[in-house]
Image 1 (tube, protein in one colour):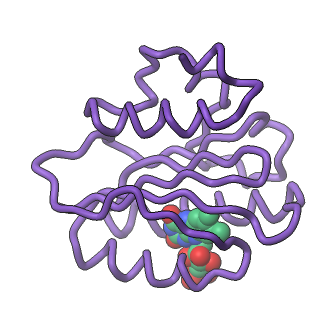
Image 2 (cartoon, helix red, strand yellow; image 1 turned 180 degrees about the vertical axis):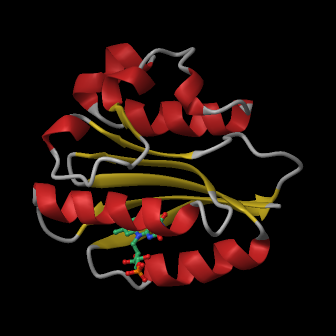
Length: 146
Ligand SMILES: Cc1cc2nc3c(=O)[nH]c(=O)nc-3n(C[C@H](O)[C@H](O)[C@H](O)COP(=O)(O)O)c2cc1C
């Protein structure tokens, strides 16, 4: 079992359709590949946590890193793990309801991730700290992510 965590930046301002397309790809592929985790999209920044077999992660990470919709990858963790921190894959956005999603994607609102004790942050302390640090990088979220 492996975990891969990175942050990146959207190449251009993403339309609601582009964001929905990314969520759709996650939904389409991750469950089938046995990948769990979180993708947070906020103000042109991504934080992505993927957990699963090393092979599945390597295959997906290669595709994702070649995706022209984002750049400036900063890998935060790429390492073997004992246990998953998540039992499904969730796409997090400020207003998922405003996106042209197909409707069966597993989504959550960003504000549900804000409470320090949010179960959406996963059940591993290191991972929870990564989510906290990402949220803290947005000035206007600072108070909520403390
Ligand atoms: C920030 C970001 C995160 C992405 N995360 C995933 C992901 O977790 N799973 C996935 O299948 N595709 C993800 N994608 C999309 C892939 O880069 C790629 O477009 C997609 O997997 C192609 O899927 P398809 O072969 O089913 O068309 C992501 C793209 C971006 C820009």
